[in-house]
Image 1 (cartoon, rainbow, N blue to C red):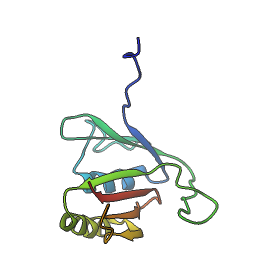
Image 2: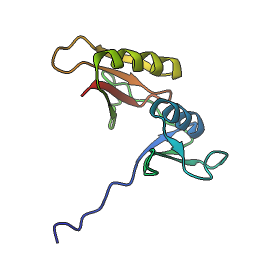
Image 3: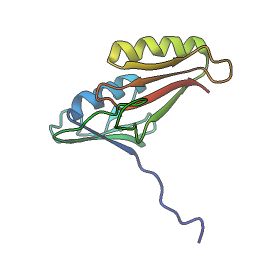
Image 4: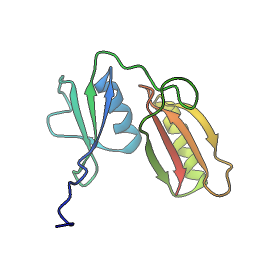
Length: 132
């Protein structure tokens, strides 16, 4: 029964402001809220892709020390990898990410093998944008 394995439903990010972080990723990735979550005041929000598949969820917590990656006592523990098709699109999405509230952590856009940039989202979770 090797084909009977769990399926990954979604990635859940803890945050002290579930609505703000969900809104950041909704705008960055073009996702939509799960029906009912658009106006929900609960501490649990889900974003779905264009096919209606849950991709990211956000769980409200009272406190969350942000990762200090790449240096410091708190590693990133998890990060999201996001891809774009071209270096020009990497630059375009960089501008969008910054405008939406991301903070640049590392810039390797000139890497000839794998151009990428690493960011922190508004809650401090790292994510990468790279040409793939």
